[in-house]
Length: 426
Ligand SMILES: *Cc1c(COP(=O)(O)O)cnc(C)c1O
Image 1 (cartoon, protein in one colour):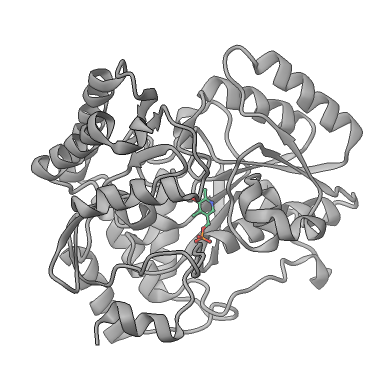
Image 2 (cartoon, rainbow, N blue to C red):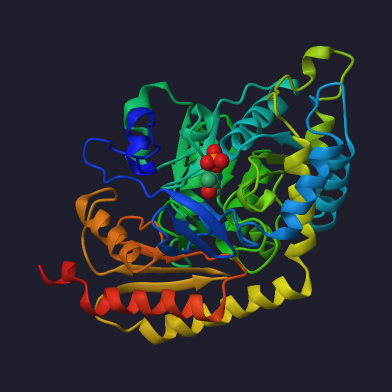
């Protein structure tokens, strides 16, 4: 029996309406920017498996590092114990994180990194004798699917059944040059009328919102105002981190520095679920006390898994290697040229790029998870490109190691959809 048929018996997939969804692709092999299904058909992994596999699948440098690690020390808990991979990773991260980041707290996935960030922020104020009960977050933000992270997320299609059970969150729109003054005003009102603990944001690029970009100047102004009110600023760099927006972190393009940062996804080069909540010395110091209850009582069994740390260390070696820096810049330039080429196409509502992210809003109305979106998804799959359209937005976030030929193929499929896709002719 084929894998896709065996899958049906016992598996329940994420983000899937199993009554109507077509069978999932069974992937049996991966290398570089390519995937192969059980029939031997080849696909370009156009979004690096949810922005994780940035140095390519089955990268030998990364797999060798993990293999070596698992033969020396597989796993031990991180409460009361420590190990070299975690220590070495913290040292390496300090070299590239914003200069105010001082401490690394380990978790095991993106949502739990955000969850820890929210709890850190709430307890920071609690330890200081203040009850602050409100979070501030962007409209249409995405921060994960656990309750705290989900509360901060502003995409209604994910949250509707849980709305009555969420943390208290006030929302502000992502500012543009034109609306910044107004947004600062709204923020002022929120700060006056609530006891705000933290402001969570995806810096410069909102992934799940449809790869929407905003300027550093606007975000800087919001962070500055929040920090003036001792509202801790939490940069969720789970998607943007490790080079996606052109710099190592999107926050590198800001003047202000976040108090807390969340890292995951490309952190481990796509090899292992691991995440980090980093923070400034000021935050960490607020948990130091002779009173044991002022400590951060939060742990995940697999925190700081040595295999994940080993993958992350190897990933950092690659991130700023001459080869990868060359490819990062090259993809950025190719994207810019492609945007310039198709920008004026009548079926393009908006085309944009930032770093290695390229996004096109198609001039068509459709639901985020409707049948038209599925047709679009299948259109690319049939031609050998795996991407996940976000409603009418199609985007690429390819592994840095994608070849010129592969990238050209992606672009020509995007052009094909603009010129021939039957959706437009209804
Ligand atoms: C993916 C993502 C998350 C959630 O991470 P998981 O590992 O899927 O829980 C949170 N924030 C952002 C910005 C993300 O892209």
